[in-house]
Length: 261
Length: 322
Image (tube, rainbow over all chains, first blue to last red; front, side):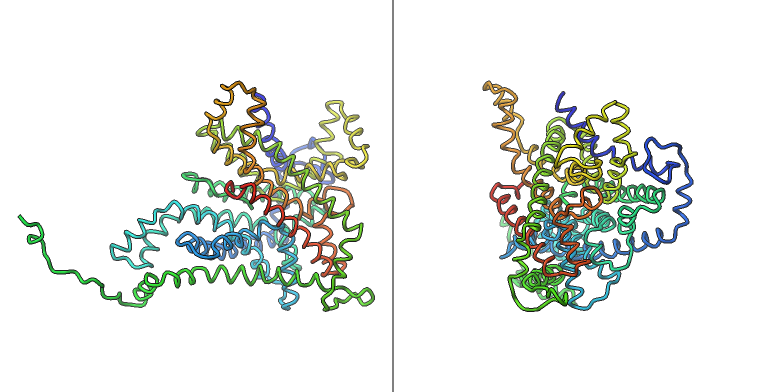
């Protein structure tokens, strides 16, 4: 009984603050964070809809997340295939290398990239943001792909080869169908991770604004509280969808999907 | 009578002819030389991580051995340990100590809050409930970091829900008494270490739950029953059986909570006092001050601390629980 209560209290602690955001998106109060809200309204959704800066930030975020996810899918799958298909010297080191960008605090990745850009005279652009994001997104795809490849029987691959398929046919008709849902789940999580990232992005974005950077500026210097409330709610909804999808794609089997950010 | 004579006995060639076409030939090459395939698979990710990530990391660390000229404010490119001397000044040591203590406290509290959730999910939740529990942990874990911080800004604000709640319960005196305490107190919750601590705990605690749950799921239920049968009280069973078996999971989770708290510079900037944490110091030195060498030296601290931490975690078997 005590355990049940403690578990319920812990979960409530995790969820209530996020639910609060949903209430604040409808409040009529626009000068402070007053609770309880004096009244409810839908007008802020219309105001937010007509804000070009919010749309521009959203567009950049989506673009960066899409490109980073594509790169992470490619690199993560290659790495997972190499690690799972054979044992070789330095195999453990490669796992460590992939995990390192998220095991070390994000600020280190950020400042390292920024100083490298300034040494190499690379101007800030969408691609500098992508460079940072793809680096730490690889691990999510890698984790999912490695877990699935571990469960894919090696005998199936051998059977395919014995039956005369070449490596490419085996990949297309045997390996890919087996790992497709894991890759999709990994890709969704990588997308959510990139869409939401702010710590590395502040160092690699220059003057550009992704949606999280837009929010960060509102947090430090609040100017349009109601718009920020609506954006926060939209961000919650946008990140929940890929996570739910990833959950349903990987639920049959060991649930490795969220092995860390 | 003789099976062999009834079958076609034309001998198959011991070595098949090579496959035609580019793909076929490549495929044959992969089969004959698995190392070549391995190299081909590994080259792109290793080049990317090696050049983009490790390359810039080493370049950064190298800069910590340069120093900044006090008069011109320019970086002098001569190897020196002067910057590390600066790092060890009392003011900077304060920052380092403050960050490590905060990270340790957040980690401990995360363990305390996460354990019941993980234990309930591992032991009692079944079927649909188990999936619900899993989602209940995953959604906050993956939801936007900034939105979480923003939610707490709303909660901790003077006119916000927490103060309102305390007022409704006629407990405002309790809150004021807490805020008047020396270190943990402050003007209001959003400008105190207490506030910073709560938000850190909220943001990083979910990372503790899943590894702990994984470790607890591997504890056989009959082990706990055996302990009870042999006369142990629930408290003794917890101390001597359950907890030691959960330690690898807790340590694995603590890697995340500790590392993430140690390097964060946004939470203490938005909710907390004006005294700096490690991440803020790095940010300030590389940004407005333009002192890249000192910022680089500061980043060495979390790298060393996390290196030691990972080494200890490995010895405690935490990596098998990840």
